[in-house]
Length: 275
Image 1 (tube, helix red, strand yellow):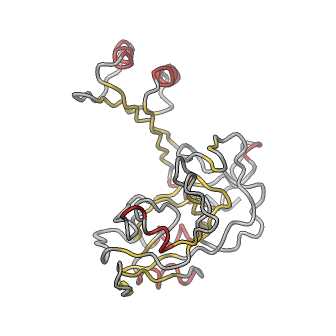
Image 2 (cartoon, one colour):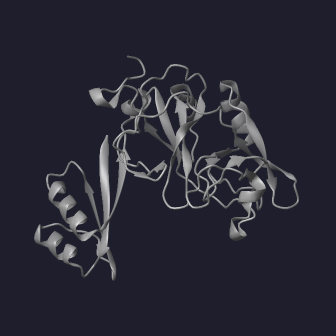
Image 3 (tube, one colour):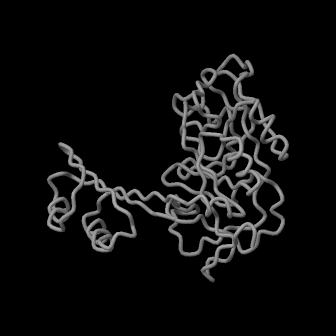
């Protein structure tokens, strides 16, 4: 596992001067400059203190080894490709058409339940990708029908149709992957930062595990908890090792994976797939 930071700051700021004084080089722009550095770098602790002091933007990205991914019992699946918007997109009109909003809180984004198929403006232009997420929707994945038929249907993952905006015509080149339900046990999130009733996005290191994985029999699930900030909230998509292997074996594109801790994080151990 390697954690890389991408720090952005004003080119003429005191932070830029301090970084140069440390002998660091970075990409300088007319207004914004960017420093990319691994967390393992001996200078990172000092840089981290400066980033916090100057309140610079720090985006962390974790790269996992093939062994770490292949040995994981469960993984969080995220999108590496977002394409299009749920329709109608004016004033977020898709919300009322797609979701039951009787328990929805517009201030936090929590509580909406899907009641109807998603609408898209047209057939997706897939290019080299096989799965996608729409912008604004981070806990729903869409896939080519033939990929669902050959890869995900054998795993017991169901699909739902997607329709063309306003015409109601079922689109031919895309279906929605249907969640197999919510994971049976809560995630171990003690100490992770929250915003009200949801947790802030987790984009560094392993994804939190659960106290038990008994009863996790489906291959494509959602977390009990919500993640996000502001008015955006979504559940984590959690998939089995078999689901991940099927995607890898078929070289499917459009997603990325984060291994979950599958032992209590308090003992510092990771449960490997074959342990």
